[in-house]
Image (cartoon, rainbow, N blue to C red):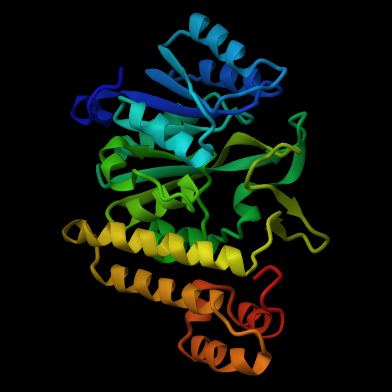
Length: 341
């Protein structure tokens, strides 16, 4: 049974929960579970919600076997119906009882000191609300593919400096550089981030909202092996001929609308917490981001019809603050409504 929020111990109590979601993950799940059980700092509990798996690799049986043998409590819940990864992570997070909640995918492998390193960062300052790390991108057999997650997201040294000096929100308003598989956050922010909006991915949502209230901290070393395989649900990444890494998913008009809706939901959620914000002016920046993506997702069908809107967004510098600058401008102007931007 889930304990109430006030029953969670803070980081000084050294209580850490792992929140894992599974769905037809039998092919790689044992390696991930073994890597959690091999941590130099073991979790105080692992909470797993399975989204009604039906795979021949028997995901649920693997989980039950692990729960019986693990050197820490493991609670496994199987959903009565499939609800999708975002809502599944929401209920796993709600069920955690630790002061630190560490998110886990089902198909990666953690390095042995991941939990110890993350806990040490949280212990260094009560102002830190989220900690995330880099990751080594590997294939289905854990062979390195030659690049890391931060390279994949274009998380440059300049952006890293900005984030580490208190500008995490500004960075996240342009790029999502926090991968859920590398993320941990303080459970005191659970009431802020849940429930998750249907259209939002949980890692982006958690990192953005918490950044308005608390600091984000990063560990530049890759503390997970981030597996790429044909069954990746979201987040698939690949290296192109130029050495740049991009998401497998393109960004068309429908996705731009989803982005706008997600940022609108974040704005509405944060308005109810306005007194807790680190800097009130950040809320106006978020509202500007919403207007920018609403404008981009509602462009007319003709180039001449799109020209006034795109010029306005360009002159206001919103393309540069919240999208990819002139690259996004020209793609909106000439390639709308399809194609990545």
